[in-house]
Length: 284
Length: 332
Ligand SMILES: [Zn+2]
Image 1 (cartoon, rainbow over the protein chains, first blue to last red):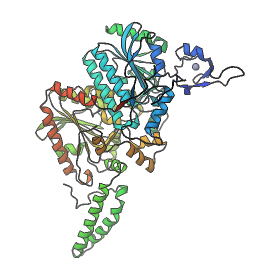
Image 2 (image 1 turned 90 degrees about the vertical axis):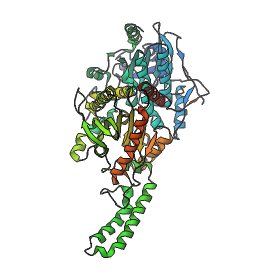
Image 3 (image 1 turned 90 degrees about the horizontal axis):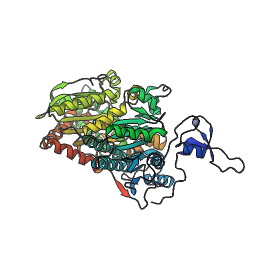
Image 4 (image 1 turned 135 degrees about the vertical axis):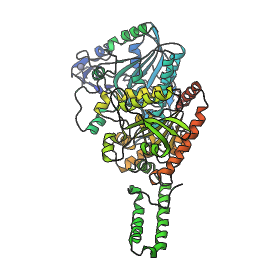
């Protein structure tokens, strides 16, 4: 499986490069998909990929997320070579191996999650960051296995577990294997809970489907980034079921806070501080 | 086992069309005032019909199997409770929001075992189907299930779950009340309940909604049921960009959702035989097969200490997943 370094650490579908006038390299300026402001790329990057005008949180890759969260150079990754197989010989309009290869080439990742040990403001944690840029952050066997091993590591070493979720749900191309990852990770979290482990779940845009219906909603403390889409069923599926338009803000982080399913809304800039504060309160 | 001499169904699935003509001829003969004169013809036609039906069912595509699993006369949780369970004591409500009729829960006796029964219910009449949301449970359904399962744990009763849902209900209220959280909590808690859990997919095993009462020590599927991460139509709509007869068939094949495929992939433990032409043609025979399986598995599981049971349940889940090692490490 060959890979090339990722030229786009973020999901650029939300950010539209402004076509350069004479002499200005393309991509130096970008337009916020939310407020349409023209933004200097470097400034947005320095702002952790949050719009400097409207505070819209752009999606970031797992790789980028790790960099933003951990103390500099403190990340020691686990299972970096673990890669997906095609257990069912799944073919739709394309073969699954083709889709995997394309995603690996695009992202420089073997699959949709980064796991490892790291420090956050000096606190040692086990961290998993999902990557929406890799097949929509979908959970197949690799994501399930890496996260399960990470949770087991956290349990064995009495370390806090932090998972940053960003996923469209279970990976269809691994069908039953994907579905069972939901149970596997949840079972690992049950054991971790029995060991009095601290699990902080961070929900980012988007967190839906089988990931929400398993570990994402099982945090001892659940944090969410502003405006993140979080839900079980996708908005379109719901609209088709109830045959009416969904209210403004439905399934956004603010809505979930109101419904009582998350503990705190946290601006990306505050995540490090918030996570370390919770670790301290839990005495971990 | 099957009452193979009876057509036994008033609803015809598309792939059963070839026998409709034969059945018509039989009916014509049978309704003649001098039907007795044609006994031989009738007998021969019936034999042809049954052989044809058996042949059709031997060669069902995965998509056809999905159709059998959704047959309107297919036995449901309430039917199996009635057929195999003595002295069923239904328990209602999640003590929090409401009582979801799409989830039936209660004490019952199956064979020699006192158990807690948990099962999706699709509804029999049109009115029931609507109140049951066609077997799509709301969060209160999953919470009701968990509450009763914990009750079973407290009194050392094994748990039997009947899975039969197209999926958890995808609606506005369901989201507001935490559909995802309800299912997630069930997965976590079921993995550590200190009592035997056996699960049977009796019809549809649709994704998280199925798994929400499907984490256990032993799982079986009835022969003509399906179990997968998504329905064929849902999969077709996303990956083929449209759900029609052709793409549904392709998706059903790709998803490896049949009982036989799930067994081959090590995702379930057993396939429970059905009458050769479907459970709807002989519910009693199906119930009997299933009862045997349940009684045997519970007897087997009761031998384990609760701690061992939970440990083994974890190991089973822990081993699911197929991964490889790449030549190049992930960038970080
Ligand atoms: Zn903006």
